[in-house]
Length: 422
Image: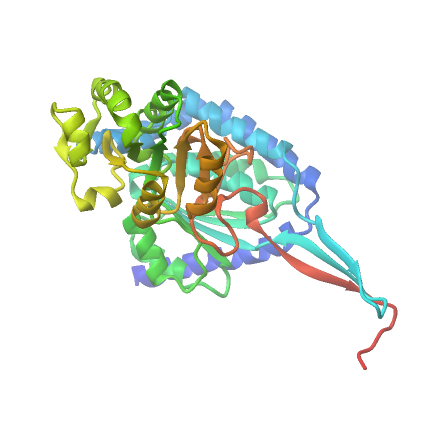
């Protein structure tokens, strides 16, 4: 009986979202922007409430002795709440992609054809840990004219509920239907199964979280899924690298925030740079608490306290202060390693040789590639998208950080003067 009630509730949510999506598609940009600004104000004015509700989730995480990186993802403080508000405000300032004419052409028979951006419709977002996903995704979906159904993890239950309730208030008295934003509050796993089967109402699902969650969604969804399974990101320090630059880039990519998908998990170093680069670099990593797992050459150059890297380490997403290090003979070996063991997420080369940089960019098959910069920049906000609904390593529809344009599709508008096909 309880399961039937849960199913009925989620189906009703999806139906309301579908109807809201039809309305949203025709809402003026100025209306959407006004709501986003109001949402940002609501976040700031409810800061103490949001932190108090987040504390309930943090106490539970501490009771379960969750890892520090998981607690970091879950935590809301003044800075992160202000960032949530700023993301909503910045999204309001972005150009609205809806209605943009991507292409216009006239056929010999006089038909005028326009290819125009339109919202996808209803977006389902299933996510873990990070409560800021609630506000970021609501903001981006509303601006791009999409209704959204969110399903957060139980570890952020109180935080997600609080953020959603604050944002939902901003819809009251506006032209945007209340059904445009929905949150599945149940922690019953059956809720996810139900949502993944509603392909008649939901147009696309975007999972955000660990590899296990994303595999589960991809295997059980009857709805198209946009995803990345994990972030095994590399930095290759070339024989032509500025080693001071490489030191700063690699340290940032691993240490700044190790529990995220754009953090470096494997550092590759050319053999001619390794002797000069690795001792100082690894010493600084160790000071920061990073465990090093190295290839035989790495362990020969830096003899103290380096674990032997196994084949499994090369494809591991640690999401922690652990780093695999391999010395390679040349650029091609680095490229081959990345294409074999990487996750096609974000990879970088540090080099002062332009030809080498171009070869790396052409040959590595990843969504985001960097020359002389940290992989930590793979992020919708850092790319100027306002925020992101996720990062895709797929090759169809969207790739990399997904902002407003990635939440649209297109349709053809055909204008005639009575033409009929002969």
